[in-house]
Image 1 (cartoon, rainbow, N blue to C red):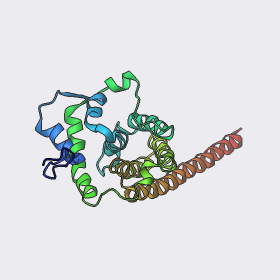
Image 2: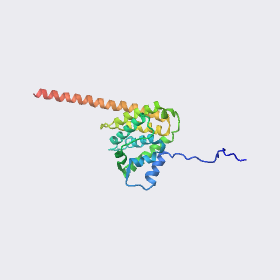
Image 3: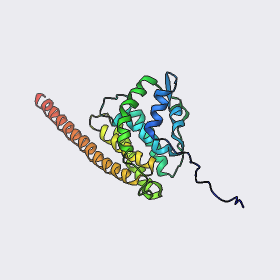
Length: 224
């Protein structure tokens, strides 16, 4: 007698491809337009969209290679995403103008090619664990606050305030994307370190600038 409620064990459920595989396929194995938009990239994300976007948008500045021109616009986009994460959003919202903004395919391919080996390294050790950090409201708020702070740091046009904050966002976002709370915690530690470094640089420059201004003022007074 056949039972209609028996589940066939030989059926394989579809699995989500690794990010490095998706990027390799999308940017190097399929024919693409010579321009890439943010809307195009959103189509790659699927259900893991917020973490995916943090990883993608932080990647250019997190790499140990020069990537001028990315920090400020991508920092603005990630700040907007972080605020939505704090507010409890599951899907991101972007202004239409930002979605339609274009980047040259060759430039994006260069960043992706440099980033894929780093992605593969972190993918090799990632797995769902401590998932409450990535799925609970307090955990997502903490992640959102940290990423917001790092996004602001990335927008400061001072050397030393971009790379480490971007690395913090990259690692934290990757953990969020993969429901790996351990990796997100490591990313939060990087965010704290980056925040201390950025604050130290800004304070040092502010003190140095104030001292220089005092010297100039004193010199002018002496001349008068």
